[in-house]
Length: 53
Image (cartoon, rainbow, N blue to C red):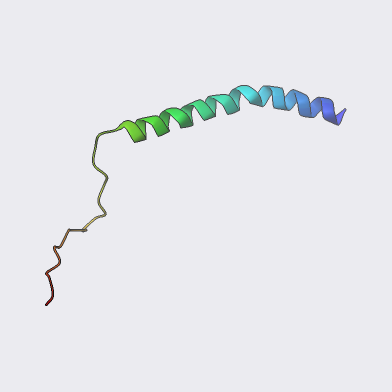
């Protein structure tokens, strides 16, 4: 009885899990394929370091 219920639930969740995995993969591909530069933290600046003798 418990195994029948577990199989029934797992069969129902297969579509939901596969849909979530597809959405995750699409989001990952869009993030990797974007050509925008990375966001810089608020107030962060690049400061050139001077050569010390």
